Amino acid sequence: MVGRVLVTGGASGIGAETCRVLAAAGWEPIPADVTAGGGTVALDVADEGAWDRVLDAAGALAGLVNCAGIRTRGDIVDTPAAEFERHLRINVSGTWLGIRGFLRRHRPGTAGAVVNMASVNAEIAVAGQAHYVASKGAVAALTRAAAIEAAPLGVRVNAVAPGGIRTPMTAERLADPAQVAWFGQRVPLGRVGEPSEVAEVVEFLLSERASYITGEVLFADGGWHAHA
Image (cartoon, rainbow, N blue to C red; front, side):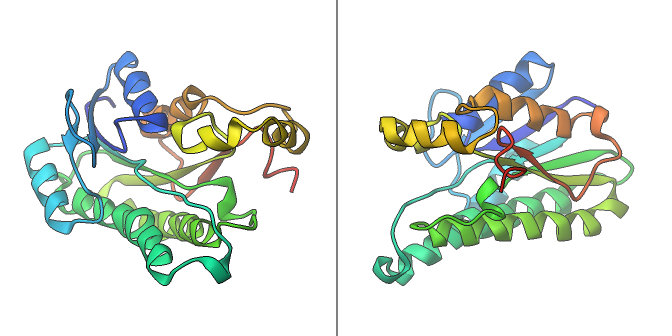
């Protein structure tokens, strides 16, 4: 199964690499991002109307990759409620709106697949970003619930849970040698991951090679989750 795939967060990081990997595998990726231009469709994933406009314009889709997301750092006592709610709005509601829009437009009798972006922190909590941890835990739970509802429609729903990946989101942290050393000690494979190593998992989950896999959260984290 190949065809058109909408990829949110497609302008940079894992989203952009996913578009590259999908194109190389014969898919037709449609990158969408809050930052448009250069072939990237404008999409604020927290905007219900924007989802309708983008999905209607995209036409029939074989797949959806909900890769858009944010992460900031801050202790609970110092984090404004608005920042917590912003993470839920973009990371969780944005994913839910995408799934809903995809399922509403899915053609009966055809196969489809959705891949969401969770995180190793969906199950392994870390201090200083409880708002992010909570949002990614919600994405993992949403993935399982959506898979049950989508199965009768012929749609599989899975998630990838990356660990430490070298992206613009982690650039500041990985510029600190102490943080890089921490990853080397914490992650059994002893290194930070690359966006392509997540994108390849996304492509697999979209493909017919994963035809009997749904409701799963697949960790691409160098063994971090196993080493918890």
